[in-house]
Image (cartoon, rainbow, N blue to C red):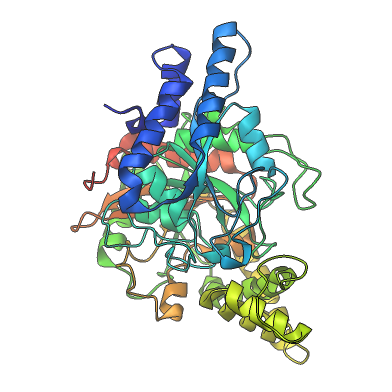
Length: 488
């Protein structure tokens, strides 16, 4: 059996018991990438030399008796919109194809401080804008469960890398579901923490009031370990909450006593996939009948406006954040132009892909004079109503459970020319970002075609410990997280 078939916590046990060295673990990860990534195309690049050097250094620390970090010897893949000093950070865009950041993101600093091995950078929808990983300017990424299907997005590369057994852990970013939806499609665990729980310093911005970094893993315990390492206050990020680091891994195996689960009284998406609905219903019955939880119907009347509000707010912030990429301050510069205006137009026209242009245009329109009040201000008011709905619901229940996505993974290209249908894939995940809440997707079933189905759990702000405990209860009672793609 390959070491990469083990969870992160199992690998740590082998490392500390000296059954495996950091170098052996890293070599196994690189070997898996070499043999499998030609089919999946999750990685944009891998740092073999740096990873092997880091692993050798960690082994020397173990041999000399030096204190070891909490992630000692574990390979971690990094989404290509998170800065790693000395690596490119292109956001899978021509606009940043030659950008190499001169500094580490907060999260990559934390990973290295805890002796993780940074293995490579993963593919994404350009500037994290998309739900299928088809908007990358570099390559397509495929779902390890079915190579004809999408891995989800925008963090599709990170999700596919973990699902294909190429790395036990990966980082993604979640603006409207970009960790949870690909985790659902790829049959793994994806955690989106509370907004401000993990510093965004070094994350290349899409929509600053929505973006949040989080981990992919094979188990809930692995996700809890990553949260503990990555969380904590960072003075370089003005939105970072001044809270101590989480200690979720310490309590992960303690069930929530008298767990109360909120269930939507009416489905958010009409006509959702029947197999998704059946798997989520079965999971709820498992919680009620075997895990002692209480199910309670709740009203979240404004969630139905979440997609509309999100696709005003997120493009508006994107329009502002991406204005800096003009060929002068940052980014790709066109080679042929006759004046400054033509240079701006040509540089942005060549540098950005269609989906990025679409969102910039929507955002610029909604922020323009005469339309700000009618669109952006109204969307922000709806955002407040959605947050208030969640606040009232959490006065009655501990967590809320929904499908992660209304459908399993779709065929690559099936929704490429229908952006509105693509946007609706995020109907269950977007409201969580608008309210700034923590949520997790865990595997809860397989379709008849063998595609994974994800279950989304949502908790009140800063209650990641409760969220992870509730998710772990289901994981311990089922074997869905142990399923692996038959592709390999």
